Every structure is written in structure tokens, then in C-alpha cells.
Image 1 (cartoon, rainbow, N blue to C red):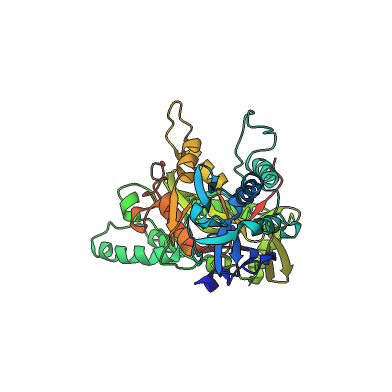
Image 2: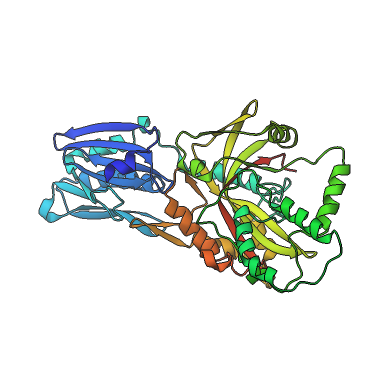
Length: 467
């Protein structure tokens, strides 16, 4: 059981400090399968181990320091009990009772997978444990400073240039990690539509003008051409077209498609792309074996990739997965507000038609807060005195995710690899279950027809200068 936890650990520092023969302490930092950095603290002499989340590690070692100052320094030992807490929640108990006054029990309240539940530390060896926890070799960062820097970077990334503080007129960016475009269904959906249309074909249909049927067949053939990176996944969330569009005068292939194509052909230069679908499965990204990925493009795709996407090589690039389509109607056509539910910052290198991708932040992924905020802002009902975006994020971040006896919650960032059940539960919170057209979660009140989520498709996004 313990081996499964450590098999994908990072290159964290591992230190040892000896108090006496019954108190030999070891500590190691690693990434767990929930996507967080964890410290494993062990008294190897007794064979017991506990796990300390990084976000509570500062409180943990401060509590050890307090016990040394206020309790161990007393001339006569006395029973005591302390707790290490974070956001009004206790994570560890430190207790020395009258029945075993010479020792201190540190109890792991949550007892994560592989934890023995507690470790024993003698009062005489607590000084050695304190020195281990505060060792410079542990390289524990200044979390407060890092949070301030991260918040500043996130602020700059999320708002249009010119938004200088939280008191100014803030405008969310709409030029990155999201797009509004004409919707085309996946090949998997074509099979469903074809099966549903077999019975309809048996009914009498009105006669059409010569050539009209052929034009429609050609339009449908173009519509269902294979898309780069498209794959089928049984967990994909897809809408029931008949249920949400039945009885409405909309078409997946409106006559304006041809007009748009003719207009595009007349232009000398095609517009730049803000996203590029790639033939890399999301399962490979999530596995994050080395943090490096490789794929190859066809000659035409490689040319488009260079000329229309990465022409600005000084820009930032992001890898996005779990692609979401929020469907709505516009001028009798179906449109989509499309975005990746998760993204991570990457570096791109080319080798002919081959493309190498490398993670820049050790697998740090972010929930796409920017696209979610714009989605909620654009498609929510206007209610006097209610900030719909603020209400949405408060609701989202209050949700619990219980996986493997560990009470987790929705987080805006994690480190890959992450247990698949975390992704599943987050989707259920946002979109509901597969047969609910993406409207069974906390996004269910939006004024969209339905929401889909493609779990295998992966795209690269560019972050050009924030204007």
C-alpha cells in the first residue's frame, strides 16, 4: 500500500536526524496522487509514519517549536495537548499524557493512505525533530511570499492591461484559453445521429429542388471530417441533440457556412490561430511520466502550425485538456463557447514535422478560472445586487471531493499526475452526469442549450501580449 504512494514521487529532498536509538526521524517531500506536495515524517526506529500536507507544514513545525518553548523547558514535565490547524480545521494533535509523561504522541487526524496514524517522540528527542523540520537542506519555501507572488501573477494574467488594482474597473481577458465559434459535432456523435435518423428516413419527405440534396450531403460530409486529435472516450459528456434542439429551426450546416468559406478563400492571408488541436491523448498528459511530450503533424498541419499559430515565438503557450463546449444558438446556427477545463504552461520546440512539449512548472495544472468566469458572466441571468461570478466561485470552492477516505475539495491548482477520480468528481460537480446534457451540476442554470466535455482531445493555446 505504501509503495503505491511513492512510486511516482518527485525528486524531493530526503533528510534524517537521530535523537537516540528509539528516535530516528526521516522526512521526505513528494507529490501525492491528489496533486499536492506532501511531507512524509517517519520515526524509523518504531516503524511509524505520518503525512503532512505542504499547506499545513508551517503550522506543524511552529507547533513543535511552541511545545519546546512552553512545555519541554519546564522543570517538571506536565501533560499537555496542542493542535495544528488550518482554516478552522484540525489536522494534527500533539499530546503528552500523565500515563506516558516521557513521550509525545503526534496524531495524524485524517490518516491518509499509508499513514500509521501517529508517531511517538520522546521529550528528550523533540529538539532533534525541531532541527530536522527547520533544516535549510529541506528547502521548504516561504509559502506566504510565494502566495503573494502567485496572486500578483494570476491578477496580471486574468485581467486586461490597465486593471491596476481590485478597486479599479476590472475587465476579464477574453483572448486566451477560450473561444466562441461555430459548433461541429464529433465523429462519435455522427454515429448517434445516423442511428437516430434511420427511422426518420422511412417517412415520406417533401420533394427538394434538383441539386439541393447533393449540396446538403456535401455539407454534411465536410462537417464530419475527422478532426485533429479527436478520439472517443466512454466518459465523454455529450448532449442529446433531439432533446435540446428538437422543434427549433437550427442547423449544424447553415447556408452561411458556404458563404464564410468563400469569404475566407478570397482573403490573401488567413487569420492567426489562438488554439491548435494536437494528436496527443489526454491520458498521456495526465499520466505525466516525464513532463515531456512528442507528436508529429502532417505537412499541411505543420505548415499551418508554424504560419498561423507559433509565429510569435516570444508568446506564452499552454497545454489544455478536457475540452468543454457550451452550446447556444445564434442566427439559426449552433455556436459553442469552447475552452479547456484545465491548462498548464509549456515550452514548444520543433524538429521538422515533429513537435516537443515540455512542462515549465513541474506539472502544475490550473482549473480554467478565466474561461469559467467569462462563461458564467456571459450566460447567467442578471439579478439585481447579485454578482453571479462571485457566487459561482464561492459555491465551487465550497464543494467537497471525497476520494480514498481523504476529504479533499475543489482546488484551482494541482500537480500532475492526479488520480482520475479527482477529475471525475470535479466534472460531476460542474456538469452533472452523462445523461443530463451537461446541465446537472452547478453550471446548470446558465442560459445555454447544453454542455459537452471531450476527455481525450488536447489543444495548445497561445497567450499573446495582454493588451
